[in-house]
Structure formats: C-alpha cells, structure tokens
Image (tube, rainbow, N blue to C red; front, side):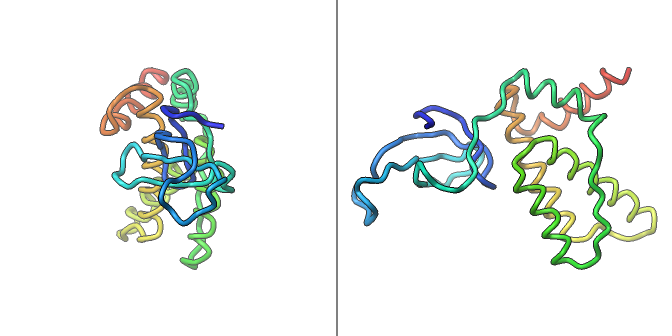
Amino acid sequence: MFQPGDLIVYGSSGVCRVEKVGVLEGRTVDPQRQYYTLQPVFESEVIYTPVDSPVFMRPVMTREQAERLVREIPSIGEIVCTERNPANLRGRYEASLQSHQCRELVSLIKGIRHKCRETEKKGRKMGQVDQRYRKKAEGLLHGELSIALGIPLEQVEEYIRENMEAAAG
C-alpha cells in the first residue's frame, strides 16, 4: 500500500502524489473502503481511487533506473505500426500505453517519430492518431523521467538528447 507523499504512476494519468489514504468523508461511498487521494503532478484535478482499484499503479522509477533507461534509449527497438485503419492503429498504440513500461513507451515514441519522418519524405503530414499517441507517450515518459531525475519537465527532452550524444560520442 502506498503512503501519503509517495510518488506513483497511476494508470494513464501519469505521475501522481499520494495526498491521503483513508475513507472518503462526506461522500456516498462505502464507509469501510480505503481510498487514495491522488494529485497528478502535472495536472490540476484530484483523483479519488479505491486502494484495491484494478487501475494500474506502481512507484515512480528511481533516479538510477531513469539514468539507465536514458543510456539504453539508442539500443531500444522502435515499434513502427503501418496499420492504416485508425481504429486498429489506436488499439495497437493503446496496448503499448497500457503496458505501463517505460521501455515500451520509448519504442512507441521512436516508432512514431520514424513513421513521421518517412511520411514527411513523401510530402505528407503525420496522421492525427500518430500525433495524439506520440504526445501521450511522451507525456507519460517525460513526466516520470522529470520526477525521477529531479529536472523540470521542459528539460527532459534536452537531457535525453545530451545523454544519448554523450553515450555515442
């Protein structure tokens, strides 16, 4: 069970701080059931979820895990989805997001970026589904890396680039 102050990854909401654990006062819910009160780090809404919720929850990666992941990014394979049907494409991308694994998010981002470059070479624009899922995957990955590395969210992409260049050079 998580404790107040813990930073966790919660479903597709990304990094949240556990504010409280306990029964919800003044709500029409089971008075015996324990709830987490979660505050997403990069959003303003508050989330109330049962402690035993089936929604995915895990601790945020450590600084060491984050540094190792960034070093491994060049060797992580990309997932390039050539699916043309938007519903099937969303399904494939959603499955990657629902894995809640940072390496899977890296693969997805790399694959969509590759697909975008290839599409632009043909004089076309990246599809909306690709744009939406790349942005979502980057938000989840960069949010967790920001917290784990102790750097502002807007500096994560530059941090990744610099560390990849250092590893290559």
